[in-house]
Length: 95
Image (cartoon, rainbow, N blue to C red; front, top):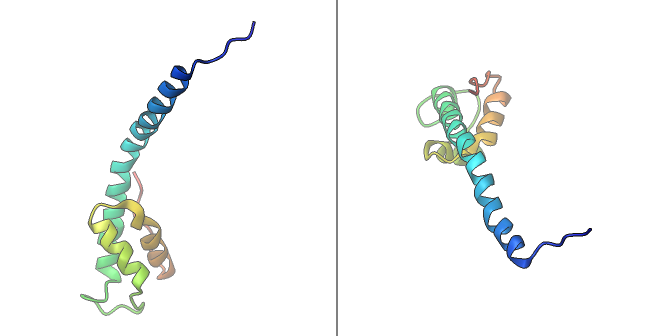
C-alpha cells in the first residue's frame, strides 16, 4: 500500500524544518561568538597595528575579521585564525 503526503504535510515540514535547524545551530552560535572574541583578543594583543608594532602588517581582511568578531559576528573566525596561524601563533582553545 502506497501512502502519499498531502500538500499540507509538505507545508508543515517546510515550516518546521528551518526552525529545527536554527535551534540546533543556536547553541553552537554562542560558543562560536565566544571563540571569535578570544581570537580577537589574541589578535589585538599581538598583531593589531594600531596599538602594537608587530612584524606582520595588518591587511584589510584581518581588520574586517577583527571588527566582525568584536561585534559578536562569528563570520570573522576564519580570517583571524588565518592571521594568527600565518604569524606563528597558537589558536585559543575552542570550547
